[in-house]
Length: 445
Image 1: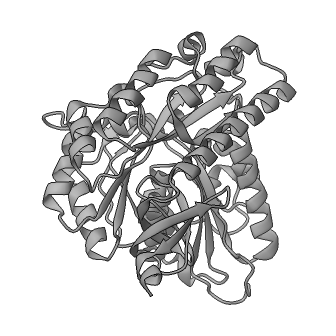
Image 2: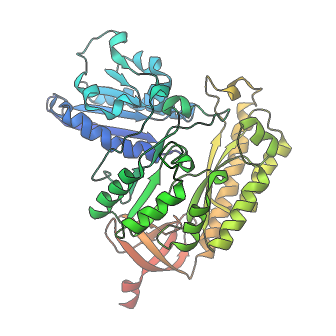
Image 3: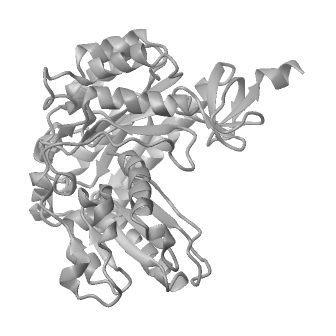
């Protein structure tokens, strides 16, 4: 999954007063959705009434840098909030609980399954407990189901995220996430539809379906429905959904119904973020990916025939162990050959416990250099994409004051519209980072 920027709170507060529950979210869209469940469960357990309140850190384990940032934020939160209870959970807490238990700033460490249950927060220990009492992290591979937790809103977001799946059955050699999330398990289709209907009814114009390995949805459900069937069912049964978007997908698992929905359903947004990871076949094999270079290129070409104008993003890792200059050039070239627009570049980060961490490593300086070259290629592709949209008319979902996104997930500045509102606009140009949009109403005036 592609990581998102963390939602950084303003955590300085009067430590003598109850201040409710703050949730600090790192990582992916699934974490964002789960943070709303955690907030509700922690508040129902009474944490908000504690003197000084509670701060919950929902961590990410994708890279070592993500873990470092979480620890840094925890230490800062403790300095600024000496009376608050600090709870750490999420993927990093699941995969390396001992590292957070060892932090004096932390009162409780919860696993990814425990964080979604109120009783986990009711058992918050008193200050000064020993390390064995601080950690409540069970074997994530023992979890067999994913419940459809209902939320009414996603705080601070103009679009709403809905979990459809959790965990992963694949074992890419670089990835620690299965050890944080467990094996793949799907939310029952009826529960997904109900959640989408609730959020749509509460005014969200755009719903984003999310999961760890979303295209594996349904394999563990009766009848084994696939993601495409879920998408079509949502669009049929929830006519109030104006925009439905998919988060990161594995193109090799895209089913026929999903491709048909992309081609025929205008409410399904023309934007896909692909888990490509590399452009060289040998590196893909060493990563234990299930696709090759030609399959990725052909997938993008076929989708453009089905949905002209569709926009692609992708995750690509720079400096994977054993990557030669020639292999890296293949990853650079695939940016143009797939027509990628929104690029997420990760300098390879060895994660303890994964096979890739035991492979011959590249020099960190070389890894950083290759990541910089990939980002430069992505930036150039994005600027070409911005230029190509000049003079077009776009529907823009306003995210916050003067900023929104098109159906293709391209950033745009826009002078009118409240957060959550969809505004029709003409694109006057761009500033190199985002489109400059003129709302039709303003233009007519």
